[in-house]
Each structure stands twice: as structure tokens, then as C-alpha cells.
Length: 213
View 1 (cartoon, rainbow, N blue to C red):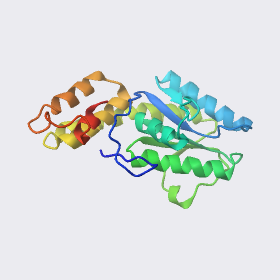
View 2: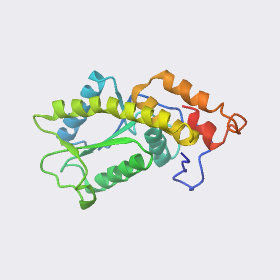
View 3: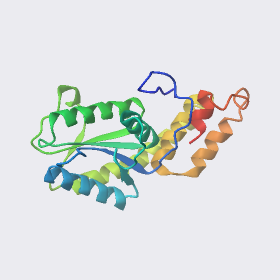
View 4: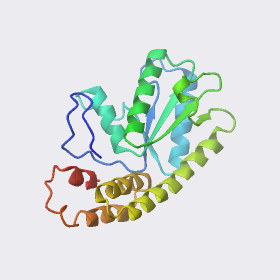
């Protein structure tokens, strides 16, 4: 996949370090944080930990550089993005979360919305499956995380069936690797790079960058 810098629109020609088994959490970060929003975030973090996922957000790393680019790279590095929506989150912050969800979906990430029962979603999301933060949240969110393993199997199967399209096959292997952390998927991608016409490609080529996960 060719990915572009959100700041200048130019293609990214350096690799982004992969963060398999990580979840990028999109929520209210600046103080004051509504109490119930904290409760939702803590619940997501706890369940992710139980399922072997590490939760990070935009405040996890301090780079001293552009904030949007940092968020973009974190989303690109992880397999999963979770957006939290609650009526006590300011509209401006909700707009940022919607934007970040769009980035995640455009980059082929697994995305899920966690919402309070009372908040209404925009019309563009009326067909999007979400998880409500209610008495069934722990069960439903755990089911969702478990389902990601099936999605990873699907991506690996697609990669195997696309052996004549190594670029797309490598991208599917990367998506499966980010979900599972299985190093065998990395090895399969590197093997594809040895195909005729690919092994001699420049280190900054799309093929080499995609396979450098």
C-alpha cells in the first residue's frame, strides 16, 4: 500500500515501526476528562490487556514534533483503532475522533466505536456496528477482540490466494501480522520479496517498505 504524509501529501518513503497486538484508543485526553469517559477508557484497557492487546493513545509518546503526524503514524503502526463517544465529550473532540477513525479505515485498520447509550451517531455511521457501554459491554467487547483472530486468518488466506500479486499479498500478510504478532507471517512476506523482479527493488520502494514490518 502506498501511504501519504497527511502534512504535505507526499508518499512516505521511510518505514513505520509496526506495533502488533496494540490498540490505538481515540478519546478525550485533555483535562478535564469526564468521569464516565475515564471509566470507559479503563474498561477498554482492562479487557484489551486480558486479550493480549496493549492500549496506547496520542499521549503515550512525546515526540516534540507535529501532533497530527504522530497520531497518523501510531494508527498506521497498529492493527486496531477504538473510538470512544460520550455525550460529555466536547463536540470539537468528537470531530477529531471521527477524523482519526477515517484515517484508520483508509489505512485498512480494524475499527470499532464504543458509545454511551444516549449519544446519537452521525448519519454516515448509522450502518456501522458499534458497542454500547452498558452491562453487556465486557462480554461484547471481548467477543469483538476474539473475532479479530478470525479476521487475521482471512487476511492470511487472501495472501495465499494472491500469490501472483505479491504487492497485495504482502499487504494482507502485514495486516494479519499486526493482529496476531506471528513472526511466520513476516517470513512469508520476505519470501515473496525474493520473487523475480522484486528482490532488486530499492529499499525505499513500495514493495520493500510494505514488507518491512
